[in-house]
Image (tube, rainbow, N blue to C red; front, side, top):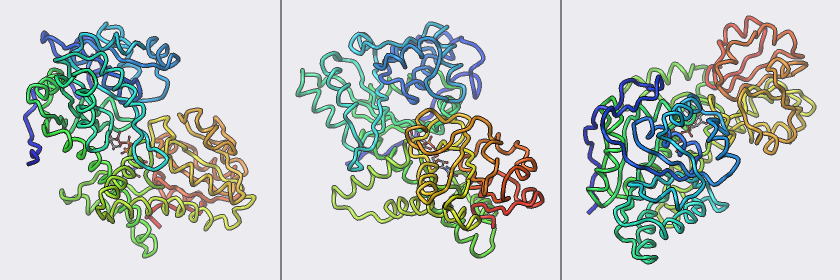
Length: 464
Ligand code: UGA
């Protein structure tokens, strides 16, 4: 019989919501553990620096030499709010080091956290090749008593496969495999690490679960519920969480479409329904569709798992299709204002999949802009943080470093990311340098009345 997750009371961890002020360990005089984190992507780097802040001794393994030397010098290869500062402080404290030698780094560590990527494969299921490579190296090196912690998002059943692999390759059945999925949001990951709504730890061994709980409890200032369960349940919790979030956003996007057609303000509806604690206020902001490196891939894996087992699931597939339609819907909003997309100049503000990140992975901006380009529009875009990947993902756009340049001679402005800086732009000035005063605010970040006063034809998502 499956064990049910149960909430445990966490201990107090740290001394503020956002403990970046100094480099003293949050754990005070308590003895930290020796930890290895494998993979210095955004999850691994946050976890490694966060554990170091708690007072643990952490080595974070990264095989990419460019990324490694940047991290060693206290710089990040991508943008994540407050992470660079946290990394610098922990490097200075001596509790955090970066290394490229996996086998050496694992030696003598109580827990080895895997945070390598598990992107979608071409068939839609999770691609576990990076994970497999690390597991094969670890099976040679890890010793009895060490705990392998899967922090990467892995398909249901992965921990069991790894346990079997360990026992078939070098008698490593004494190594406990634990799932500890992460729920960090890009752009808020440092805050989320120190203020988790919950921590999930799945495994078979009570002792190993207690050890991993201790790693967190040692640094927490607040009481945080820790849900302990078995491996499969922990794996499913992660997928269920992201699929539900995608469903919630998918619902509010459809609600906004309907509201626009009947002259009802969807934001007011969302606020009122969100007041019901069974629904909740968060993730009810209509927009250009959900994206990012997690929701799309996890939804596909969830669907793929159900298909492979012959389980009929209707909602996740509908959520995926509705999201594809949302991209089309934004395109149609522009078309509705501009009429002739062929030859039109569209000024785009925001390329990343959400604000406060440089990440373009599965950003709604990509399919929406591609559709505009395919239909003959000329697109000039500004984003304060989007990384160079934009060049390869959207080679045919004109990228500018000044938001006002996107407006020069434009037939329509299109806001695709909710960067707060866009609210501070001089929209009157923008209206004067555009050819036609059209704007599609796909994030609802601007005040409609003000825009209308400046003479804009203003289209939003759910406020028309
Ligand atoms: C998501 C989850 O929120 C995290 O809990 C999880 O740890 C992470 O995936 C992961 O699996 O690693 P993230 O991808 O950083 O985090 O982004 P979200 O904040 O969840 O936003 C996802 C997408 O939904 C974005 O495109 C965002 O713009 C969109 N969204 C979100 C909306 O359109 N409306 C909303 O109200 C909320």
